[in-house]
Image 1 (tube, rainbow, N blue to C red):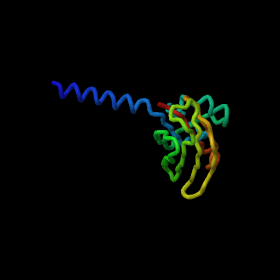
Image 2: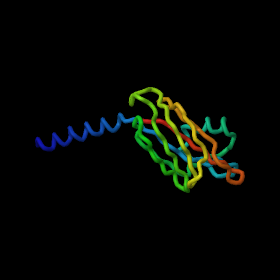
Image 3: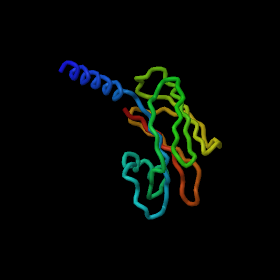
Image 4: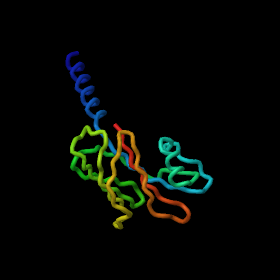
Amino acid sequence: MMRTLILIIVAGLLWTLDASAQQIQARLIRATHTEHPSDPALDDVRKELKEKFGFPHYAIMGKARRELVPGNQQRLDLGDGFVVLMTDKTEKADAKKRSVEVEWYSSSTLLVKFTAEIGTKGTVLVKGPEVGKDWIILGLSRSK
Protein backbone atom coordinates (compact mmCIF):
# COMPACT_ATOMS: atom_id res chain seq x y z
CA MET A 1 0.00 0.00 0.00
CA MET A 2 2.75 2.44 0.99
CA ARG A 3 4.76 1.57 -2.13
CA THR A 4 1.74 2.33 -4.36
CA LEU A 5 1.20 5.67 -2.62
CA ILE A 6 4.86 6.64 -3.12
CA LEU A 7 4.70 5.68 -6.82
CA ILE A 8 1.58 7.81 -7.29
CA ILE A 9 3.22 10.82 -5.60
CA VAL A 10 6.44 10.48 -7.65
CA ALA A 11 4.47 10.10 -10.90
CA GLY A 12 2.45 13.22 -10.04
CA LEU A 13 5.59 15.24 -9.34
CA LEU A 14 7.21 14.14 -12.61
CA TRP A 15 4.05 15.01 -14.56
CA THR A 16 3.92 18.46 -12.92
CA LEU A 17 7.57 19.16 -13.78
CA ASP A 18 7.06 18.03 -17.38
CA ALA A 19 3.83 20.03 -17.77
CA SER A 20 5.55 23.26 -16.69
CA ALA A 21 8.35 22.98 -19.27
CA GLN A 22 8.20 25.50 -22.08
CA GLN A 23 8.16 23.92 -25.52
CA ILE A 24 8.49 25.05 -29.11
CA GLN A 25 6.47 23.42 -31.86
CA ALA A 26 7.61 23.68 -35.47
CA ARG A 27 5.12 22.94 -38.25
CA LEU A 28 5.88 22.60 -41.93
CA ILE A 29 2.81 23.93 -43.73
CA ARG A 30 1.80 23.73 -47.40
CA ALA A 31 -0.27 26.68 -48.64
CA THR A 32 -2.32 25.80 -51.71
CA HIS A 33 -5.15 26.91 -53.98
CA THR A 34 -6.32 23.32 -54.58
CA GLU A 35 -9.72 22.23 -53.36
CA HIS A 36 -8.38 19.97 -50.63
CA PRO A 37 -9.90 20.80 -47.23
CA SER A 38 -7.66 22.66 -44.79
CA ASP A 39 -6.05 20.70 -41.97
CA PRO A 40 -7.99 21.08 -38.68
CA ALA A 41 -4.67 20.89 -36.80
CA LEU A 42 -4.02 24.42 -38.10
CA ASP A 43 -7.21 25.95 -36.68
CA ASP A 44 -5.16 27.92 -34.12
CA VAL A 45 -3.28 29.82 -36.87
CA ARG A 46 -5.63 29.59 -39.89
CA LYS A 47 -6.83 33.20 -39.67
CA GLU A 48 -3.26 34.49 -39.39
CA LEU A 49 -2.15 32.28 -42.31
CA LYS A 50 -4.94 33.59 -44.56
CA GLU A 51 -4.27 37.22 -43.60
CA LYS A 52 -0.51 36.94 -44.12
CA PHE A 53 -0.30 34.66 -47.18
CA GLY A 54 -3.76 34.76 -48.81
CA PHE A 55 -4.13 31.08 -49.71
CA PRO A 56 -7.52 29.41 -49.15
CA HIS A 57 -6.13 26.04 -47.94
CA TYR A 58 -3.33 24.92 -45.61
CA ALA A 59 -2.08 21.45 -44.68
CA ILE A 60 0.59 20.19 -42.27
CA MET A 61 3.44 18.40 -44.03
CA GLY A 62 5.42 17.68 -40.87
CA LYS A 63 5.85 18.77 -37.29
CA ALA A 64 8.16 18.42 -34.30
CA ARG A 65 8.12 19.60 -30.69
CA ARG A 66 11.07 20.20 -28.34
CA GLU A 67 11.63 21.65 -24.90
CA LEU A 68 13.05 25.18 -24.78
CA VAL A 69 16.32 25.20 -22.84
CA PRO A 70 18.21 28.51 -22.63
CA GLY A 71 21.49 28.32 -24.53
CA ASN A 72 20.81 24.91 -26.10
CA GLN A 73 20.44 24.23 -29.80
CA GLN A 74 17.56 21.92 -30.77
CA ARG A 75 17.20 20.01 -34.04
CA LEU A 76 13.65 19.67 -35.31
CA ASP A 77 13.28 17.24 -38.22
CA LEU A 78 10.11 18.16 -40.11
CA GLY A 79 10.32 15.49 -42.82
CA ASP A 80 10.76 15.79 -46.60
CA GLY A 81 14.36 16.94 -45.99
CA PHE A 82 13.34 20.03 -43.99
CA VAL A 83 15.20 20.64 -40.71
CA VAL A 84 15.09 23.51 -38.24
CA LEU A 85 18.02 24.25 -35.93
CA MET A 86 16.80 26.45 -33.11
CA THR A 87 18.77 27.99 -30.24
CA ASP A 88 16.98 29.54 -27.27
CA LYS A 89 18.86 32.79 -26.56
CA THR A 90 16.67 33.71 -23.57
CA GLU A 91 18.51 33.93 -20.25
CA LYS A 92 15.59 32.98 -17.97
CA ALA A 93 13.67 29.76 -18.55
CA ASP A 94 10.43 31.33 -17.24
CA ALA A 95 10.55 34.48 -19.43
CA LYS A 96 7.25 35.59 -20.99
CA LYS A 97 8.94 36.17 -24.35
CA ARG A 98 11.58 33.81 -25.64
CA SER A 99 14.24 34.92 -28.09
CA VAL A 100 15.10 32.12 -30.50
CA GLU A 101 17.69 31.98 -33.25
CA VAL A 102 16.42 29.84 -36.13
CA GLU A 103 18.11 28.24 -39.14
CA TRP A 104 15.74 26.53 -41.61
CA TYR A 105 17.28 24.04 -44.04
CA SER A 106 16.08 22.03 -47.01
CA SER A 107 18.53 19.14 -47.15
CA SER A 108 21.86 20.94 -46.72
CA THR A 109 20.68 24.25 -48.23
CA LEU A 110 20.05 27.10 -45.80
CA LEU A 111 16.66 28.63 -46.66
CA VAL A 112 16.53 31.34 -44.04
CA LYS A 113 18.24 32.37 -40.81
CA PHE A 114 16.51 34.73 -38.38
CA THR A 115 15.98 35.64 -34.74
CA ALA A 116 12.45 35.94 -33.39
CA GLU A 117 10.73 36.69 -30.11
CA ILE A 118 7.85 34.35 -29.38
CA GLY A 119 5.33 35.19 -26.66
CA THR A 120 3.64 32.65 -24.41
CA LYS A 121 1.00 31.78 -26.99
CA GLY A 122 2.65 33.41 -29.97
CA THR A 123 3.31 32.04 -33.43
CA VAL A 124 5.90 33.07 -36.01
CA LEU A 125 5.10 32.28 -39.66
CA VAL A 126 7.86 32.37 -42.29
CA LYS A 127 7.48 31.92 -46.06
CA GLY A 128 9.79 29.33 -47.51
CA PRO A 129 10.21 27.88 -50.99
CA GLU A 130 7.55 27.81 -53.69
CA VAL A 131 6.55 24.42 -55.10
CA GLY A 132 4.67 25.08 -58.32
CA LYS A 133 1.84 27.41 -57.30
CA ASP A 134 2.02 26.29 -53.65
CA TRP A 135 4.19 27.72 -50.88
CA ILE A 136 5.95 26.02 -48.00
CA ILE A 137 5.60 27.88 -44.70
CA LEU A 138 7.35 27.37 -41.37
CA GLY A 139 5.26 27.92 -38.27
CA LEU A 140 6.88 28.19 -34.83
CA SER A 141 4.62 28.22 -31.76
CA ARG A 142 5.23 28.15 -28.02
CA SER A 143 3.32 25.96 -25.64
CA LYS A 144 3.53 24.35 -22.23
